[in-house]
Image: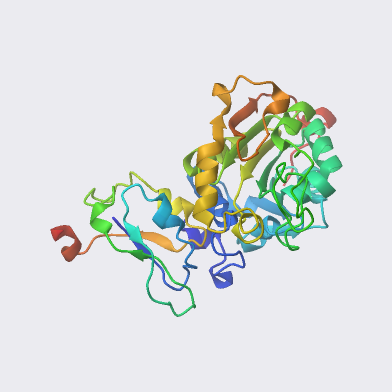
Length: 82
Length: 269
């Protein structure tokens, strides 16, 4: 599973950038349509749950996100090649 | 249950500031509630006044928004008139400890069957950052510009002394432990109290050199000490200075007789 940030919900607090032990997230460079610098899930292949067939080992970012913006999605073909 | 079946999606994004700890507590509460598989329609949520007391209004269930500090008094009445209903109270430090302090200690003493989740952000966040009863010693706020000269209340120890059945304290940095504690509290018969030390970057952090929520989370991580590793006297636990410590962990887990059993309220409905 890979984490996906909903740009309409993210308020750019960067808690996910701080809390992720594998540094999957990075600070956003562009202003989202809601007017915040939304964080980006830039390195999802480093995530603990990458290629685990749906098993969730670490959920620190999903539990910590104050705006419920992060959710788990199955990897695409492209993600599995990484 | 998906997270937006539990919460009202049409109310999103919520009103809390970027980086507010209330959202983290909402995640942990949703996780604990859905893992226990409790019926949402047989649960009532009660909130007082304050940022954290807005959480019941975001849950797609029955919610009661009460007067300032009286959330536990309203919840007691609700619980005794509908004994088959599960009652969960969301409250803040100013609501529970300052204005509703008497209701809180008497709720603990009576041991009414309810779960109380207190989100303690060390400040009156909604009204502009005045010093509250839990503002740590020597910290700045709008009403204490030269540092708070008072010492804070220790709400968890207060609940233990007043007779609550389950008391735990965690911070928003300890999400897994907090989820587990909320789960235990929801299953507990009697007064279960979970205190969450939460970050308020807007009104607490900004005046205390921690304007970024991640700096506050780092502060929680560095200054929190597990209760089983603490050897100091009970009065020194919640010193919470810059050089001090936040004692976290489960404070008490006991099975005192609850108020419904003592007065013999029969289950109906």
